[in-house]
Length: 247
Ligand SMILES: Cc1cc2nc3c(=O)[nH]c(=O)nc-3n(C[C@H](O)[C@H](O)[C@H](O)COP(=O)(O)OP(=O)(O)OC[C@H]3O[C@@H](n4cnc5c(N)ncnc54)[C@H](O)[C@@H]3O)c2cc1C
Image (cartoon, rainbow, N blue to C red; front, top):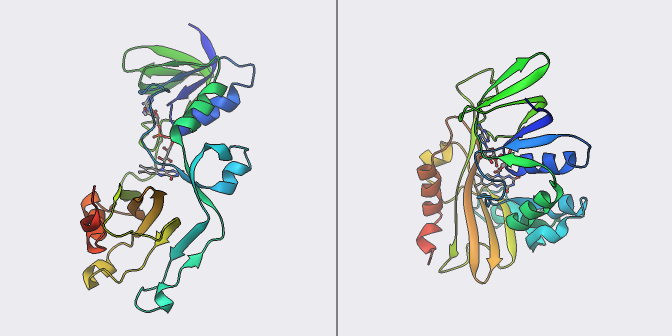
């Protein structure tokens, strides 16, 4: 059986970033993933522009906002409505361009369309067993299979706080945020009733995508139990956002 230097599990951003760096070394590397590395990523990735600039990758931004603000007040009066200015540009990554950029750098790495079922250690080597029955041996296995990995042993199985978000892209009867504005966190609670105010906090993450289209997302950063999509959607409703969506 071939012995690999490195076997990477997954083909998401973490797996491709690791693979693109490791491909520069003289190593025998393979990847296995439930999805093809060419399959389009589903998530929206936002980032501070300077983080991409440091890597010389700012051309991968599909949108860039200079007016970046958050609201931490109670929203009740002018003072409670004053935005905190971040004075940093924020951007939205063009996933397709980012994915292609990483894939270009992964030259020579073969990805097998397999799902890892088990990992065993044998004679200082790791053996990965796939659901198809395929077995692969490697000196090092890197698990980049995402937050639901079967191979991460958590000390506590229950009571793990999770992030949750409910977002929509659409045109609105009136703009949910100012034109050309990016709102990182709008925590103003004045649209909530007393019971909702006492529940786990969430905030609005919103941006003007141009062409009268906006992205709005109600986000709970960490909560146990995780806030449900219905609950988050309800908060958008009370903010009157969903009611204002045209399409
Ligand atoms: C709506 C939403 C918005 C987000 N926005 C942002 C953001 O703006 N900025 C940000 O930094 N993060 C954001 N995130 C978080 C981001 O999605 C994750 O941090 C990121 O996708 C993690 O990348 P990953 O490569 O670790 O895992 P994933 O993207 O989950 O990829 C896991 C890969 O492993 C494969 N896989 C899974 N199990 C196996 C297995 N057993 N064997 C083989 N392959 C397997 C999957 O097919 C997949 O290819 C967002 C997430 C969501 C849901």
